Amino acid sequence: MGKAGRNKQVRHRRAVKSAKQPGDEIIAKEVFSEIEKVAAEAGIAPEWVYAMRKTGMMVTDANMDQCSKKELAEWEAAVEEYRSRKPRV
Image 1: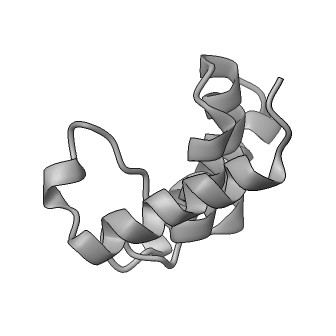
Image 2: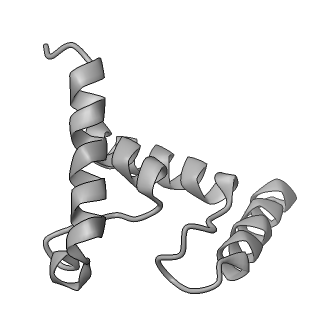
């Protein structure tokens, strides 16, 4: 890995460490950008990526039971917001 790649990893680690705790809304813009790139490459639905950016959390089957009703409603609203703005193909 070159110097640029190592520097990017260091910045990523620092951004992740700057969050108070996992799930906090204080997540660095760089981290979201990287997650969005990986999500797109993995074929994750764009409305989920949008909801992740908007809410600061990623709701999955594995963690859904740990979310409050308010958090789930916020997530679902963000997903629906994305869908209502994007024409279906």
